[in-house]
Length: 216
Image (cartoon, rainbow, N blue to C red):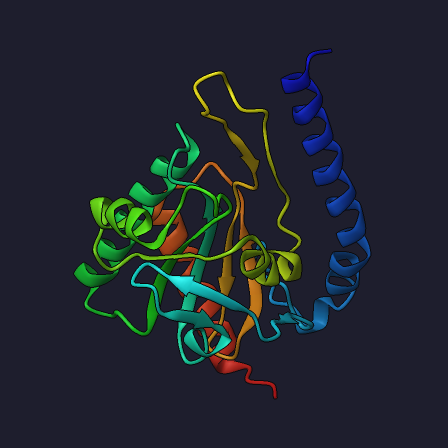
C-alpha cells in the first residue's frame, strides 16, 4: 500500500469512527418519534448547539458564531483546489440561491464555503473562488486552529495527502452539507448526491417545522 492509498484508508477509518460515535446521538433522536415529524435528516428534538468559534471570511474580517445567529446557514467544507465535489456543490449552491429568489420567498439564508486547506486558501483566493459561482456565497477560512474551532464541533474529518514533486496535493474531506438554524443549532445534514430542487424543498419543510415548534 503506497502513501496515497494509506491516507485514503486512514480517512475512511476516521469517517467510519465519526459515524460510529454519532450512532448513539442519532438513535436518541429517532427514539423520540412523537416529537419528530419524520422529516428525513432532521436532527430533532435535540439539535446540537454550536459554541463560539473564530475564523476569517473572504474579506479578512472575523467570522464566528455571531455571523450565523439570525440566519439559516448552509455550510460546506472543502478547498479551492478540489477537482470535483467542491465546484459541483458550489454550483448547486448557486442554483439554490437563484431558486429561492425566483420563488420570491427568500429569507435570511446564507451559503458558506469553509476551507479545510488554510495553507493555500487565503482570503483573496477564497473570494475569487466563491465569487466565480455566486457573489453571495461566503468564503471562510483562517489558520488551521481557527478552522478546527468549527470543524471539531461538527465532526468534520479532513486529511491532506502527500505533496507531489510539484508541491500540489489533494485534501480528503467530508462531502455533506450542514444546515444551521438562526439559533446556531445544527438541525440537518444533507448527503450527496445533491439536487437544488430537492435541497430547497427539504429546507422549506425543515424551516416550517422548526418555526412552528420553537424551543429555547
